[in-house]
Length: 229
Length: 229
DNA sequence: TAGATTGTTAATCGATTAACAATC
DNA sequence: TAGATTGTTAATCGATTAACAATC
Image (cartoon, rainbow over all chains, first blue to last red; front, side):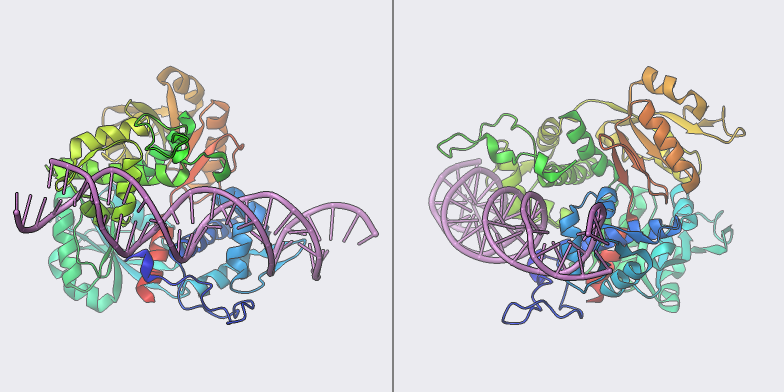
């Protein structure tokens, strides 16, 4: 996926430069989509804490995104806020979900039932955003058949069948480095287009597949840089 | 931390527009620092796999950053590559470490000895970049005193003392939402300036402290958007 | 009304890219 | 030499920001 493939989200403007239709533009730019997802994360947490409205300034404090940019990003899709008050948390959550087209449910397969796999399976991070872990795989015969929460750990040999039956869109790799590439290839063969890689391996996939590699250390490295300077 | 605080890394150029000194510029821009950290992550993995040289195009495939941009980012600090060949993996790792000033060791404290905490403690992600988990805390009396790897789980009551003794720079929260804010405040009081939040809570801290909130679901949301459109 | 905060403009700055000479 | 890839330029495009009128 290259940035040049992506139209700017303001491309839907009328020829006279009038405000864009409050409907859906062609396609979001990479940056806008990333920021919207970020706002959504904070809004979801704020909702859990009982917050009813939130200002662009508060959102800014939690997301590190400039408040003007937040208002700008949002106003491209409609007038969601109330002057003098802020944005309704509930309303904004559903608006952004609609924009990101993640209003529905999406199914995930998880690989690896070690500590990390179990942490992911029992966490709310994915569930809060409509991602449901519907299958857990492991290669350890001792683990296969035992349960993690409500899910039985399955044999990776049955991967393709399960992915079709359960309509799985995303594969999450929480496995040792040595196993990552092999599983990624099985996932690609089974038609999965998005892979989340929590392993240490460099995973190679065909261009139509997106691999996202987890990077806590990367974030830490550069937080530290600004702390040290 | 605001973007406007940060000088562009090309600010160190001579007045005649000549190539910048291969020394250290004033301060990296947010974007450059983030990308350098990303290159470092891939380079570290490539090194583990025995790769000796890497081209900007290969780096591009793994980082999703345009290859011209990679060459540009790097050439701002010196001529690290060999035309027709690429970059020496080892050499580039140490150059970037020098630029990011993360050549040394930094100590981390980990909070929460559940599945996620254990996964973090036993992972190489941090260790590979010079971050060492030197203390693990939990509030569960049953866990305190037991071991995770070589480390004994400590009582969070002794936090301040341990942080001073062990020279801890970063606190990582792998705890339930309810505990996150309280621990963050203790960390701030103990002088920690960087907090990594893996919990579901919105953590509020003074402006001089940086909180980085883990966001696998955010990344997933926007990967999915580009898959759906 | 007075205070707060949105929506929007206009100006600036940095990121991105194609293209290509230099050179390994 | 021939092929590959860097280092660098120049042009473009998007992100960022301050500022402020509109309005709740």
